[in-house]
Image (cartoon, rainbow, N blue to C red; front, side, top):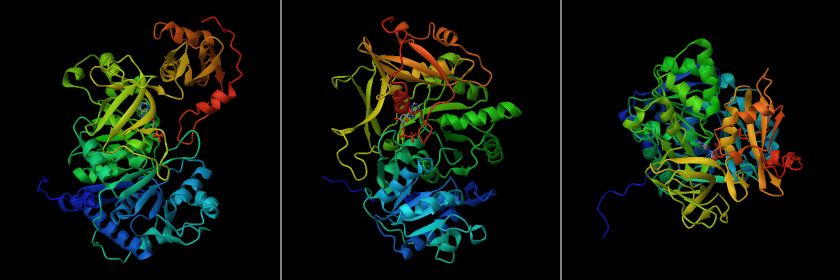
Amino acid sequence: MLGSMMNRPLLIAPLLKHAARWNGGQEIVSRRCEGDIHRYTYADAYRRVGQLAHALSDFGIVLGDRVATLAWNTYRHLELYFGVSGIGAVCHTINPRLFPDQIAYIINHAQDRILCLDLTFVPLMEKLAAHCPKVEAYVILTDRAHMPETSLPNALSYEEWIADRPESFDWPEFPETTASSLCYTSGTTGNPKGVLYTHRSSVLHSYGIAMPDVFNVSRASCILPAVPMFHVNAWGVPYMAPLIGAKLVLPGPALAGAPMAELIATEGVTLLAGVPTIWRMLLDHLKATGQRLDSVDRVVIGGAACPPGMIQEFDDLGTYVLHAWGMTETSPLGTANNLTPEEHALPQDQRTARQVKQGRPVSGVDLRITGTEGEDLPHDGKAFGDLWIQGHWIASSYFGRDDDPAFKDGWFMTGDVATIDPEGRMQIVDRSKDVIKSGGEWISTIELENIAASMPGIAEAAVVGLKHPKWDERPLLLCVRKEGSTATKEQVLAGYEGRIAKWWLPDDVVFVEGLPHTATGKLLKTKLREEFSSYYFDTVGAV
Ligand code: ADP
């Protein structure tokens, strides 16, 4: 028997409509690429999104067409999120940190019809346009006065494009499983893979992340997503903020410590969200200037493991670090690490020991960890194995490819290796392709790297497993010294004493000038493994 409640599809445009009607005076503040601060309200945004929807429809964009963005976090990018998806087209957010040939590849793979780009990215696209023949127009996110001289074919100014069009738009209704946006993973091997979000997944994810044990936000919140809108939809914040009517602060291209600190203080930001590297810049700036973070209650940190030292630095400023984990394939929020009131009362080191874990699954997703035979592993905080996830906002395949083995029996294999403790907290141990298999046991490269990076004199560390005749694989530690540091191999190895099992100790330490990274800043271990594949171990057999 079917129930008799209204069966309204979960769509994205109504999120902004609700904000405009019921929190219409709430502000959206952006630092623009032109350099100044722009300020308007949800009611203003909704009117301009209506104008944008007319511009897109008049251009001939229809249900299912792809419209790409290459843009920073600003109100214009936000308008594209709602205008493009609102008419049933797909908002393809392009990550400018991908390598240029990958950018051309994904534009062609997605068959983008229009590309909307910030002024910053005009030179990049001028070089790539010839390789993207299917793009029919380039909309530059600025006004006539700031339009650059450009060789881009069919270049329009966004402001001129949407101006003088009606502000109200009759938003269509379509099935909630209609594609709403598209984001490609950075991928360390092969071409980037597309994840095609639905209206339903995006709306449910917004409800999921707003909850108290996750972002814990309300109409009284002021949220600054430093995580870019080209990176997994800025972790869903642009949809979630209008859902709850929170003030939104968008930092544009200025992510360095000083401009961020200024924006946080002047706008009274209560919640930050971003990757550790951004917060390193902010914390260094705060330390150098003696500034504080008085308005900020919590900072959501994910995308990479949050170092324990960073948790303590924020703690000293009165800001709670909500460590979270996710992936492009998971919209991205999979887990978040909130403490219970009893845990909050613990001494700082005990709190931090819990906070470094990636947290408990958000209601709406489920997790499991499996061993080498595919068997479920216990949640004892010790056994580690492949991490699987399923739920309302988890991908079920990649865009345009149905055969990926990561999707199996209704689960997605994340490629991460993790433990789950008796309190349900998941902790990432490693990527499955990086974990070192030594004598039938696994060694976490992340743990070895974190310890090395916490030693004085070490700026960055990478651990790779190298073929070993007796043990199958053994760890090699590569370190970049801090400027002026004279750290030695012996000092670094001594730094591990008492912190790891003896057999985890790296067989050797090599000091290097720098380490290779992917386009999105992750260590490129495939390259390191290649480079050091014939590295001779003095210690062969000695472990
Ligand atoms: P990104 O664009 O951030 O690289 P991806 O989807 O490519 O997004 O990367 C997701 C991966 O990042 C995860 O599978 C995991 O390995 C890593 N990751 C994300 N959050 C965390 C975290 N809090 N701690 C450790 N690793 C994380």
